[in-house]
Amino acid sequence: MVEAGLEMVNLSGFFFTIQQTDLPEVRKMMPGAAVYLEMTHTTMTGPRIPGAWDNYPYLRAIDQQFYTAAHLAYARGADGVSLFNFHYYREHGHDTAGRGPFNEPPFHVLKHLGDRTWLQNQPQWYLLSNDWSNPTLLGERPLPKTFHPGEAHIFMLDLAPNAQNKKGLFRLRALQGASGRTWSVKLNGTQLEAADYVAKPIDHPYDAFLGQASEYACFSCPPGIARDGLNQVAVSMEQGDPLTVEYLDLVF
Image (cartoon, rainbow, N blue to C red):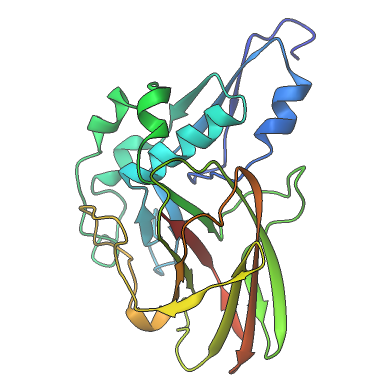
């Protein structure tokens, strides 16, 4: 299509804000076209609420996740970012009792999303989640992933650290509950120490679908071990019953 004259391409992650993409490969394939990364109102959905449409509880995409996605996209060659379903912060659907509370969309992020210098100096919130996307040029969908005792899985996170990246927090989330298990997490070969649960590593106004402390395992990330480009996160469950992990994040 670009060879036929298409001038702009919008990379859509299918309903979710997705930071980990094959944008660098797409950029190489289309050097003459404008490439935009689409972001949306949510980063993760939960189990269906029966008997309703628009019936998923969902995590709201927060300011720092937008800023991090935009910063990473620019670092990997994007010309801009776009927004879709931005109105879905507001109440919608039939069964809203299990999906709220609702909020106004964060229109204030718009003024920053094109300011590359400003974005480079913000706290960062990277994530991987159980989204609905198809396999990409980077391989199969990384999540969900089921762990068994003694089993390890490797996740690759594309990061673009900045001067603000000091001590961080890594979290994994399993909707069935992650407590009662022993985990090991290494970032680029460095062992991360277990840390206390934090519901909001960076403060934000959204309380919907945050889950309980029992759904998370948290780890402290020392400064200086994250690097620009692909970073290896090795996660293993050393003890405990099998468990499916739905979500990972790394916050600096």
